[in-house]
Image (cartoon, rainbow, N blue to C red):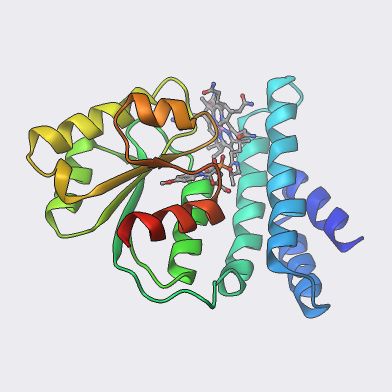
Length: 208
Ligand code: B1M
């Protein structure tokens, strides 16, 4: 019941109600990943479907995204993976031309929860900024993309890392709704992860 309410309040963009719902669900002992997957992420999928169908426009998407972020903030401390030890530095950002940051933030949160030191480069991140991060000693570069139009900037970033002579100093992982394992291979990334929890697992493997 709580999950359905949270789901609906994300779709309706009711940030305070989402926060109240998440807080109540946690207080009742509901698992953070159930709240995340069955309410918050499921609601954003529905928002995407409504946008595609022409029932929602950018303002509705944005308000729903804000409501989801409000819920995520409360979940953050509960997404930690207690079994994991500190494993190194990861720089993560949404690629150039792309302003979507919910998935990227989620990956960053899960990594922090898993004990990684995360340098969040933000959104619309230029290849040169990723190169600077690689030069600063991070072990992993994570790129997130949500738009098919700007996805090629992942490959441009990998090329920029090679041109700057730092490609072999870092591991590169890519993800985001339109990104696939096959695409990751084609552009020369080291890894792909379909969601935030598997990203943590994959990155742990990359640095081990
Ligand atoms: Co936009 N948007 N949006 N949007 N938006 C999509 C992506 C879209 C699919 C909607 C649709 O048409 N159904 C569509 C893209 C179509 C395409 O490219 N083929 C779209 C569009 C078209 C646009 C605009 C162009 C709309 C316009 O202005 N006309 C515009 C672009 C702006 C820009 O970026 N330059 C735009 C704007 C926006 C808002 C600003 C309103 C808002 C973003 C707010 C924000 O992020 N702060 C927004 C939103 C909210 C969405 C949808 C509805 C939801 C995205 C989301 O947050 N999902 C989205 C539809 C959809 O995806 N269902 C849509 C939840 C999030 C948790 O999932 O990001 O996939 P996701 O992350 C997952 C995994 O992918 C993975 O882990 C995460 C969690 O498990 N993952 C990684 C992500 N990054 C990873 C990195 C990794 C590993 C895993 O390693 C490093």
